[in-house]
Length: 105
Image 1 (cartoon, rainbow, N blue to C red):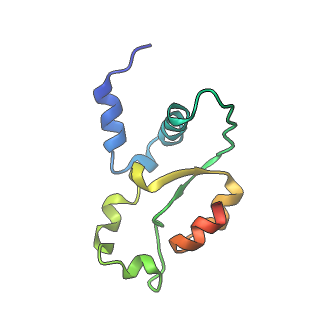
Image 2: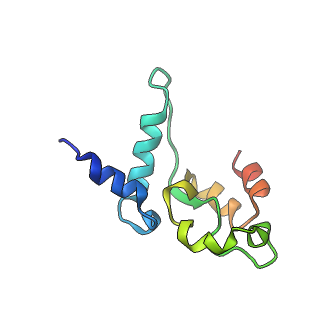
C-alpha cells in the first residue's frame, strides 16, 4: 500500500488529532519510525496523554503562562500528545509539567 505524503502531513498538522479515529495508530507509527531499529522495543502504551492538560486548574502553572490563551488551539495537536500506559496516564492527570514528568519517567 502506498501513502500520499500530503495525507500524512495533513494528519500531522491537524489541530484536533486527539479526537480523530486514527490518533493512537498515528502516534504508534511515529514511535516505531523514530525508534532505533537495531534495538528491540516493546511499546506498552495503551492511551494518549496531553502534556498540556485539556482542563488545567485555574491555579496551575499552565494557567499562569502568558501563552495560555493559545491553549485551545494546540491542546489536541500532535505536539501536545504522548503515548502512555493507562496507569501512568491516570497518575499524570492535570498536574503541572514537572509533576507529570516525574510521574511518567
